[in-house]
Length: 252
Image 1 (cartoon, helix red, strand yellow):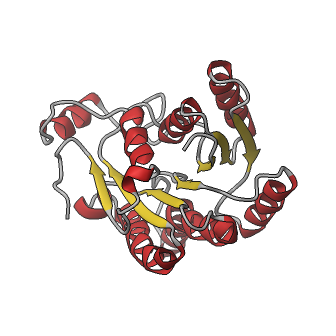
Image 2: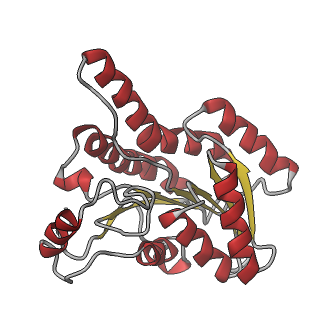
């Protein structure tokens, strides 16, 4: 399988960076995209120091149609027009004021765009370029899609699951598998931030106490699940939800 073209959205930090690192180590050519050029550049440099010339980066807001059309044209110009593996990892937390209905509407749009629209638009832009047969689409949702939590974030991540089911039905006849991973508490990601503003020690301990392995997860453990779903070993797996949550919520 080495030598595939892999595109990872939100690939500059956390889970996305761990996914990019794993594919690069396997001998694949990886493109990481995201909004922050300096973050992407630093991640690409770090990974390329380990596996030279394995990672390219392209600043792209994957919730913006025009950015994705530009990305698709750039892939063609770089001779990377056929994408073997697409990993929809871009997302973001629900933060901000919603005291008024106008504020709530703006926040809902932002959260849905970051977590759901980004996957829908990325697939639309790159769908003609997915390898047929043998292509892989893996999206990152969240345990919140099944266990609840923040209203808008949970709704957006549940939408990623529904999108996966529908897309698997459409792309299956073309030889492309489509699956989704729902991580639980994963440390080392931008979701909680370096200052851990959204994760106090007490909250972390409470979450860990509810799972079966007694600890939080690592980005590399989610990356391992992505690698499996992108492999030939998973050629008969499509339309599935793979929970990576330490047993905090059983699969549904």
